[in-house]
Image (cartoon, rainbow, N blue to C red; front, side, top):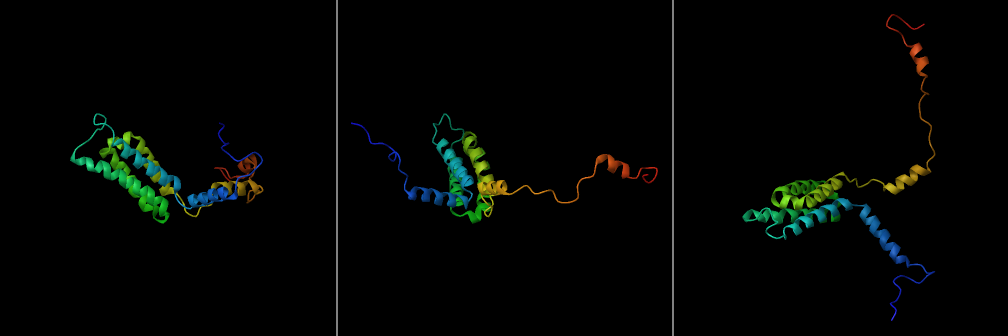
Length: 174
């Protein structure tokens, strides 16, 4: 028995709904610090997963171990809130950086450095994100379409002519 083909038959096009959904997701993603929130979320998830490692691998255990679960959970919550509420991105990203740095001590060196790096990168990306900045592709297209404008102002003088016209230490130029 031959399995059916995975894609549409040759010579046909995909329905427009697929492109619309992809475009809608791209617009949604462009209106929020998507990559920052996603990296912070992944960093918190990675740290939580390293907490499930065997006892011989875990560096810290005991009553203080509750912080090892709370801080990565706060990272995950901040990542989700960055995606859902981008207006408060500065607050969530600062909390994300502080909590991520706290996991260095409480959670196996921040999830063996990977979760720590993901959390820091995500928080800093979210902090630096500008909500009303035009997308990079549109800026490149606009820049490529614009003709090269001549530099404004008077032309630069010749270096030899300007050196001769400047007064010397002994008196005015001749």
